[in-house]
Length: 442
Image (cartoon, rainbow, N blue to C red; front, side, top):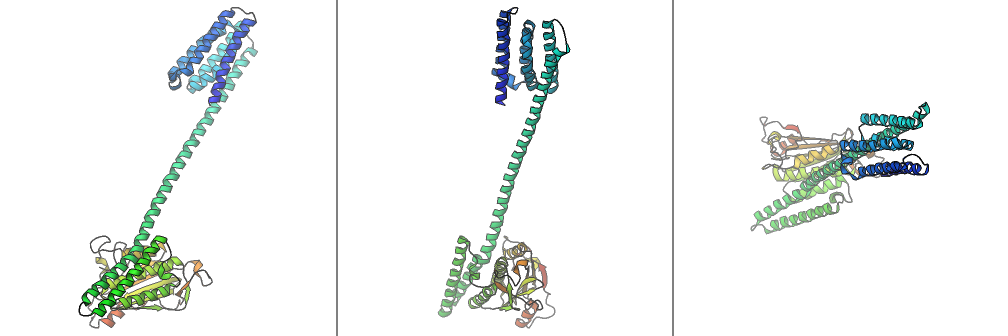
């Protein structure tokens, strides 16, 4: 744009100088007047770019063009060479004036150029109109074409800016969503590992305190178990820092990890935890292993803390293209409809975290419980196509026995074994889908 402006300035100055030089060298009439008017026209033209209002106000620009045009008409009246200055005036008018006013000004300038040239020649011919008219047509086509290209360029620039802004907003939204998802994941991990481990340590130390001073050996055993739980929690905390796989799965399968969970629970707490496996193992993705292990850890921890159970049974199997995990205890049970929401007094995040883990993997989660009838928790996760038996990369952890039901002993069975006094008047167990705002225990 700046280059075109300078070219226009040079064209105006050059044509005015040409008219002055020809008036002097050609011996035409009144050469001094021609030179003076050419200089005045040049000075008037040069004043325009120096006046800020000419660049910012259409009215000031029109007044400046009118003044330059009047001086040009005086030059045209003195010499026929002034007709050439009409060409750069076309560009000025088309650039500074509104489209309709510019077209009118160009037409008037072309007509004045034709009339002035014809007056100097003493006659009018069609050829005299061709030059100014053709110059006007070229100027209109060039300026309007340039303006169309400029508008399109501006539209593209605004579109690019909008796209850039939208991309930045989208990136910010994705970043925020990722941060929230990672916070939720860490909250579940902390709840299912560190929080449950600290709760176990608290229970063990409480039991040790009760055993003193009468049973120091029992107290020492509880303290040693609490120390081992603290070691395990430290390993979990270090895993969070280095972002490694769950330590319980390192070097083993899901079934092995569940076996260790049952053994550790039975050793540390006054209840019997057992794992049932149905059929031979089949491959399972790591994400499924981690989710099932964390759900089992949370469910068993809730049984220890709240159920007052003597037995908890874990059943790992496969049914209908899904891996299944059932956790059943013979504890006190509860009413799922009367649980407090997470974060309120007495409300935890265990059940909500379990449900979120299952939903992330496209599975289903159900809970069956009633006061005095124990609790049964059931998880079903679909197996992806890459988890078939021919996949050597995925560890084999899930028993493969589609004909064998995966559900372990129901709460009625365990409850009947441990509470023979239960009568038919006891409330029936309730089966509900996991409520994201409820804890697995009251």
